[in-house]
Length: 219
Image 1 (cartoon, rainbow, N blue to C red):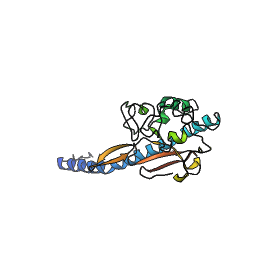
Image 2: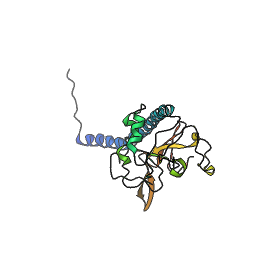
Image 3: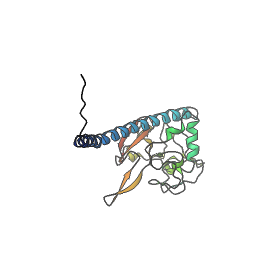
Image 4: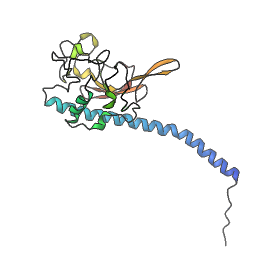
């Protein structure tokens, strides 16, 4: 006996294609969100790798982290991020076991842009050529600058000049790094965003990593 196969009609094909299109439209955001969640976790893992390198560097340098700047020239309006010599800072941690890719977020749209200026940065820093990350806004030169001009952080103690009214009692409470932040216009207003949207990864001096809203002041 021969089996007869009935061909799909044009209408049936159109219905099947329509159903597939609807499913794709429903599932695409789900896959995109899953991808972003994986990138957030990957960036957090990179931060932990950087902290491991930071600890190794500090162990060999009396608990001091690599300087952000070795000169008295503080770049930026507030001098609160990787100053002037981001390549030197990056290479110091690479020399202690970090990998170059640990300094980058795959979602960072500004990677390698020489003219990119994040919030509170100044033109000419070129930080985006070396890392997607920024030093915490707590690291002002007047609190962490040494007489030689180097801006350095000690992993075990806060400087005597650090103000007591900021709710930070030890290095454990202090954010060391976070994702670069910039502004975009949304609904006629400027909104602060990072590569992770309205949230950012933060690395603390005790090695913990938190994913928090940008506007959350943290500690």
